[in-house]
Amino acid sequence: MPVPGRFLRVDGVPLHVLTEGGGPLCVLSGGLGMAWFDWDAVAALLAPHRTVVRFDRPGLGLSAPTPGPPTLAAEADRIARLLDALGHPGPATVVGHSLAGFHAEAFARLHPGRCAGLVLVDGSIEEDPRPRLPRAVRTAWAGGVADALSAAGVPRALGPATRRLIGRASTVGSHPPHPWERVGYRSSRVLRACALENATYLDQAAELAALRPGHPMPDVPVTVLAAYDGSETARQLRWLERQRALAAQLGGRFAVAAPAGHLVMADVPASVARAVLNLSGTDRDAPVPLP
Image 1: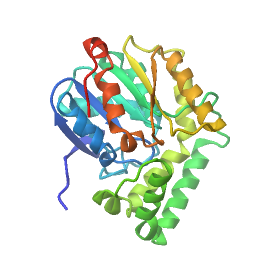
Image 2: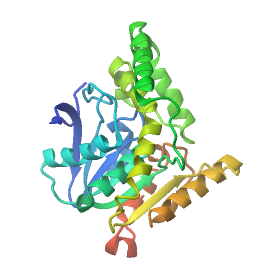
Image 3: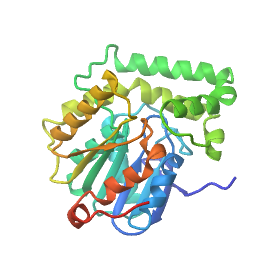
């Protein structure tokens, strides 16, 4: 199976990157454990209007791993350095899904001159993040579990099936498996990256909470796009209110993508593309039609 895109060495790590289309720059970054192909439908809609960059974080998709666990600042800096490596110094709209919403916001705060806008797609929210165990303990435990499972052959045997189950639980529609899903999620490299992202989730949330007071948001448009599956459960309605509060905190616009599960880009890719294309300037006044 031919490998799409190319590999660029960023901070010494070979990252898998795809660049498509033309026009203003847009970066797509997926949630915990996700890969470039999760954005296929969104990228196809955006490419006629935007230069679309999507990449795999270290250890995920086809990217090489890093020696250590992720941090918020490193992920925000990685976006900037990736754009440098691609020769794109100008400002970019960054689309962050789930955990990558933390990365996108941190990018805007740490690299304000390089951010043209943000779209947070069902972004992660932690109002009062407090990791209970030291970071080193949690990452060592997560890495050890991942290594033990890999030695037992679990990723090869169950990785793709587990990914499919998570996808079905996170969508409201029926979506066929992507060919690369069966390949990438058989890898112990991907399992370890997922384990470390999960282990450092609250650390990254706490880093963002600490970053906010001293690094104000730049004056750029922000859209918080929340998934709504159509139910009226207390949990779903509370999630929408938390997403609305995040939009208010960032001085942005709140929008709902429906019917959609957490993997909004799979269920309603046009809603994500529309949020990008209508984000600012004349686009906001004259929405771009999408199928």
